[in-house]
Image 1: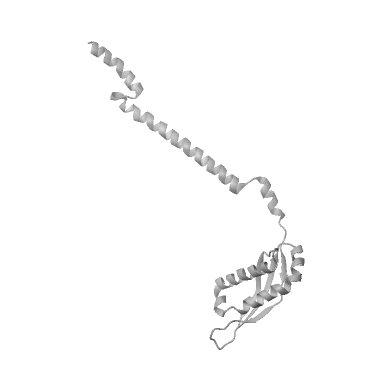
Image 2: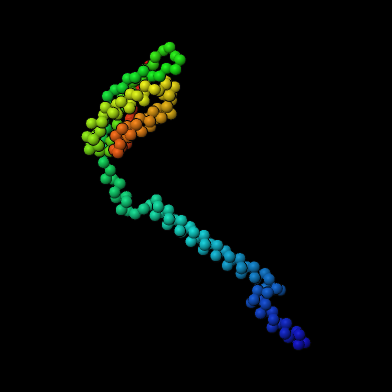
Length: 174
């Protein structure tokens, strides 16, 4: 009987300690919520950190948004019309390109700085456009490449100043 008397005393200790027997079902239940709580807390900390990081990177502060409306209006400069014959590779027919271009500048002061180098800009336009083939101007992709190339050439000619864009008023290939 002494063995039986000791057995009930050990059972509560085993249940408390998470031992085998009747406490076997209780032990996994107590571990699962603890793991779930730890994973949820870790997820919340991670999500909060990512949220704060994204806010700081993309949202910024209210001070940065106040500076945005102070943008200056763009200044546009008309360039003289350019008429060039296109490079013909084996074709008997000569084709011409007529282009009217406008430069978009950041401010009025830049326009005054560009005026003295306008012959250089026109020269770069003439020499580049003369080497184009009619197939180079096919479709919107061809015109986009032409616009990007002309913008790069203008910026090279007026360095260290920069134009915002080269805009087409008229393009005729005949």
